Image (cartoon, rainbow, N blue to C red; front, side):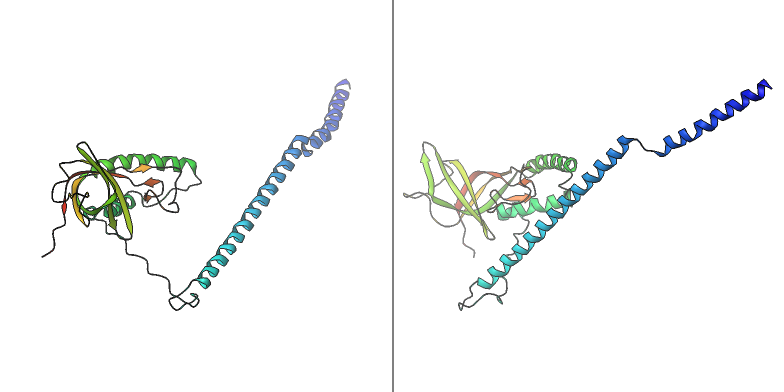
Length: 259
């Protein structure tokens, strides 16, 4: 009889404890509810920011389209009428990728080499990918600068306003024209380089001259320049990659007339 009473008491305790345990499992902690509320608020704020950014971008596009339309309508033509129906000016042909043509040909050649080495750009929003790309550019520049150092004969003109002769040296700026762009190249040479064929009492003969010498590319990575500036100075080989070069002139002579 005593054993039966004990079993009954244990069964009663288990019955009483069962609802309490069940109730505790169904009621989430207060902390979890607060966390969920905070996450919902954060997602709402993030969505609101994205909506605002999208609205601003769409408005900017509309403004630019309006400015472009106004510019086309106001553009003059040869007869003074509106330029709304005037065809766009033809795009100048690119300079061939031939370093023997001058700085522009060297730039085009380097751009072709770049595109072969880097056919795609990294996602600029991925900072790690961008950092790795800039490091790869540094290595590529070192090789391009080393392998691109060669002797060329380029045709250009001396800017007479830049000529300075002192002691045994002469300094001046050579203007090379490739396509629609001028490349102004400052040089300093020994006076023996400025021979009697190009030197006059006033300075250096005007007109085209052939400059023979060593060209050394000086490509440089600029992580703050993803695209050309308004005047693109210095010129760019590609995003983040600026174009510089040195020209060590060994000789200069008038252009030989074609027969």
